[in-house]
Length: 151
Image (tube, rainbow, N blue to C red; front, side, top):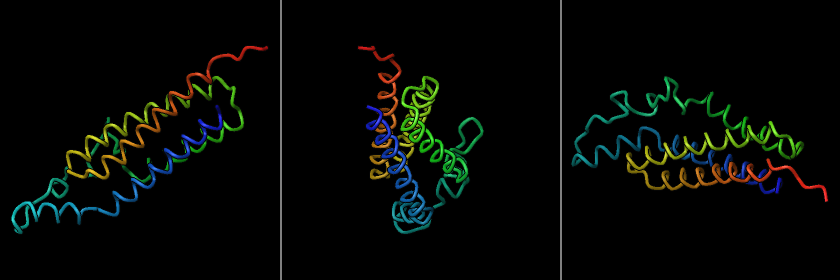
């Protein structure tokens, strides 16, 4: 069971990184191009250019897409996976895994909504897959919390 939990956490983290790279690769040029095409070739001011883009997606006053927070999220995920591999019966660790994966899943659902609003179907699907993996990891941590019967 712990091997599956570790694998799901690592897969969610890897897919999360892919999503971040794809989104950053599309950048504002993709948004500006989309806005230009939607306005019949004339350049329209986009939501991102008015200050409502990625830089202002604050959640409780913090931008969840800032590079430092993304690095922290990846490091936390990998540290939790490593912890599960080394200490599979640590109640505190498994509670942390459950809480972190559930929180990351909730943020991923928020990202699905955001990407859908921006008409980025591919990124919305990718964020949905990451959410599924994060929630799966949270769900896998629950049975691991139960004490093992000794015989």
